[in-house]
Length: 151
Length: 151
DNA sequence: TCAAATCGGATCAGATCGTTCCGATTGGCA
DNA sequence: TGCCAATCGGAACGATCTGATCCGATTTGA
Image: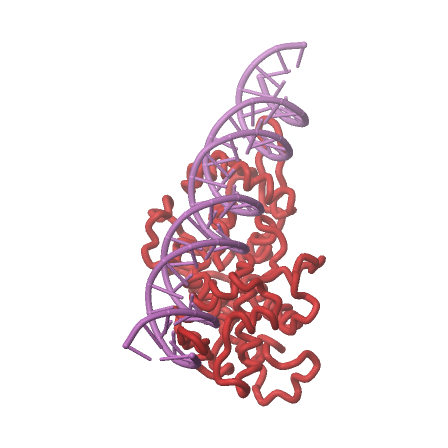
């Protein structure tokens, strides 16, 4: 019941990127790695995955870099988790194939897992990058409306 | 973002135990393993952990076994997760020590993780064994009141 | 007192995660 | 027009953790 550290780093990187949203047009992995303290190779790997998932638009070559593909208020932690770790599924039952569950035949718990899954996913989808990007103690100054899960 | 399969098995075992709540006084690992399809060694290991966590009361020796220490409606999925996997912490930041985070110095995301953590934990704590124990399709007959997270 | 049955802890293989490195691609510059 | 530098993209390696199996400790009943 813990996010992978790669996901943790991804959130830190994207939050930093969200803060630079109005600044330079393009960011690069080296710059964000230095600013956040995330190891450069790891940052590069994350840029790959986030780009593949469509959360950032990346441009290769000299002067290239990346930028958020959507405004920070439209990117949730659930999006980041799915981009880095894959689909949010609590158990093998919920997975599309739901094959390799050796007790799927008479498993009576299975029908309930979907609801649990959606509950957890909803909790993660209720937090946006815009909320994370605000400075600690200055949340009142944010133009974003906090969701109930953060209350 | 996935529960360990041990946790999955633990929920299946405890749900089966909850169904036998009004039946025989003591259950044993062998019996539940056969009934649910969980491998016996794994079931034994889970009994150990669940007993150590106080979710079940176990008695050793001939004729021994275990039973739920609380009514099924008072045991939530969050309890099971914590018993098998340890405390529910999304990131290293939330952990008590919060040491080995090499960017804790100027990490601006850290203050927000606690809220996310509680949101997820709340989602898991809103589902009880009593809800999982009901037969699929007969939820209306359950005496338990469904929680909002399942709505 | 003996024996059977059960829980409890220790051991080992397997898989996943995290890190690191190298190649492919692109744009700028002479 | 050709070369070079900078960046993303994918592949390989090592470490850590999980999950399954086995054997010993403990207790009750005959």
